[in-house]
Image (cartoon, rainbow over all chains, first blue to last red; front, side, top):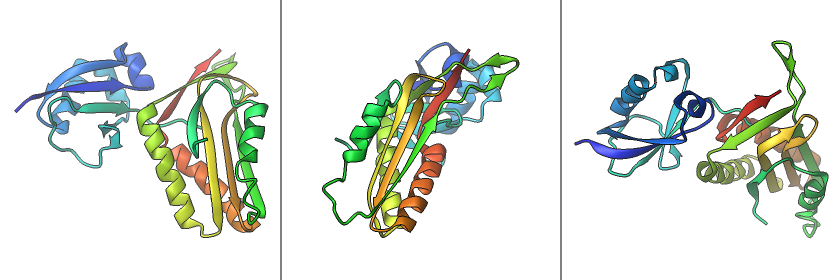
Length: 78
Length: 133
């Protein structure tokens, strides 16, 4: 079942997509990744990871309604 | 004061002084190791960087920071206190954007743990930067 999820953009992903967040409808994170690349082809050049509800996602899995997914380009702190 | 946090703008000498008083009541800590990361005025494609603009995923960063501190404390048995702060927003070249302080009973663990904390921050803290010219 497809669920509405909030996608937060960070770093260069914010510049590419031109926004801070968007809504997607997806049943799992693997599908969501594909949707992200489809909606924002510029993201194909970014080696991004995903966080689910504030925790780094180790492997793809199901999404629940109102989950928050953060799109994380390579970190550059320090 | 928290063990770790994000701070808006540069980490000033005043803030560093305040942070360095943390743990002053711990008279068993014989070593204090500190690291300050500063913004460099790199030249990129012929243009000088005048500042970096940092952004963070705050909610996750707070959790990751706490996890880094737990990891360092469990990896170095002599470590007594781990404190670090990272800037968000604009930090000019020459200003400090990251400050780490580790206290321990003796020097070996303070120095090693400070270095280890830095590497964990670089690897895991959800922070990004954008060059301003």
